[in-house]
Length: 114
Length: 113
Image (cartoon, rainbow over all chains, first blue to last red; front, side, top):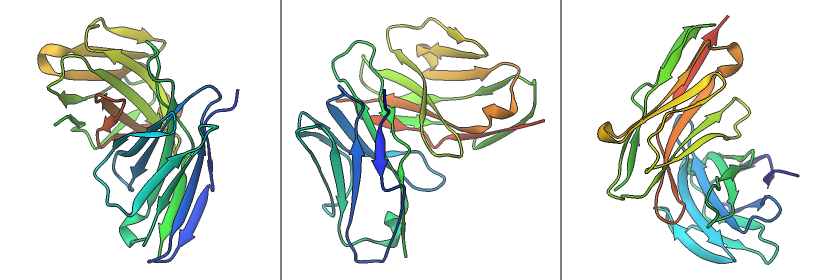
């Protein structure tokens, strides 16, 4: 089975621009979470979506938004990009409620803001 | 608030040495889950282990072993007979209610041949 996929792999944007990152979960997984990993730090939780509804939001400004589609894929949007938004954006999928689930991470999208 | 501390920023060992990565956590929840992930240079987080707060049994998987001590809020990870392929960044994480993971800052492990 295919793992979590993310696109694009790399992205370069200019300050003030907007970006959309995409994630496809593992087949059968209904929950998608987004994390931001700044260089040299651990990932930080941004959003969690389950069954197309937002179930959790981390401490990120309103410039960050996300949505989940009927096929459980997800998009993360960031508006008015700042230099500090440069990071690896990781998507994770899971099957909440299962007794032994874990979150499976995709390879990430590396965003560089110049 | 939940917090995970990995005090070791970077560890260097020679191949075949044993190495222990420390993880200390803080939480007010009585039910929680702890994780270890490996992040090789490619960037993808690789799941290693998930342990719930009610199971304090140590676990061994091949060269990997984990020591969970609730009394000291620690969940340490030991690699026995390290190999160059073990070189990576290792993250300890705590699962908050609602499946949100709180990660530590990570420990860079360098294994030299």
